Each structure stands twice: as structure tokens, then as C-alpha cells.
Length: 132
Image (cartoon, rainbow, N blue to C red; front, side, top):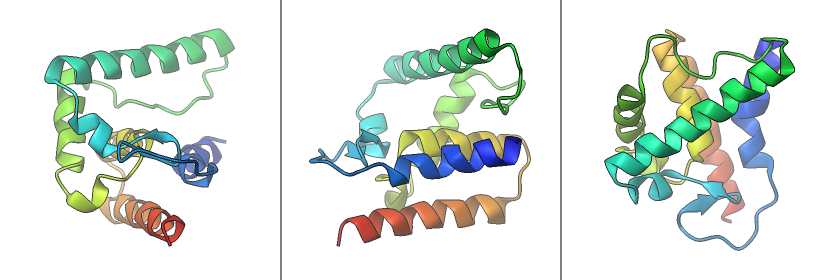
């Protein structure tokens, strides 16, 4: 169940129908350019909202079947730093922010760097294909 949900979260943003977009969105969702436009305080605030949303969802469902969206023991400042690092790579700028957060969590949870790299490259390819 957890693996399927993670795969859905990784792939869903790239499967959405594409509409007219600004450079700050990819497939209609925020990307690295959007992230880079934020101040440090805005980044922390954004992540606090995302964290609260996922925690609320888990509490409301009361099933605790949702995967760990955020690494245990990490704080917002560490996430901001890690997402900033992810988007330092220019090829990652068009990648949806939801994927960047998932990649950061996977890395923090000790998942295989090669697998994270493969998933990231697959998203890059999908974005490139959509722009042809």
C-alpha cells in the first residue's frame, strides 16, 4: 500500500493535463522557480501549511496508512535547506515542488540515492516530452 501511494505521489503531478503555464508552474503545479521566488520566511510558511495538511489528513482518516511524508526528526529549516539544494541544479527547476519534497523526504529517510536519481530523471524526461 505504501509503495503504491508513494508512486502515485511521485507520478501524479506529471500526469496532469497541461494548461497554459507560467515558468513558475509545471503541469499546473508549483515548481522550483516558484520556490525560488519565496523569501526564507515564505518558504517556512509554505512548508508549515503542507505539513499541517498532511498531518490533518492522517488524523482525519485515522488509518495511519499514509506514508511518512516528512522525515522524522527533521524541522522546517532543514527542509528549506534541502529543497533549496535540490533546486540548485538548474535541470530540477521545472520539477514540481511536490516531487522535490518527496525526494527530500526519501533522502532523509535513507532511501537509495540511485533510486531517487532515477525517479528525478524520469520526471525530467516527462517534462521534456511535454514541451515538444
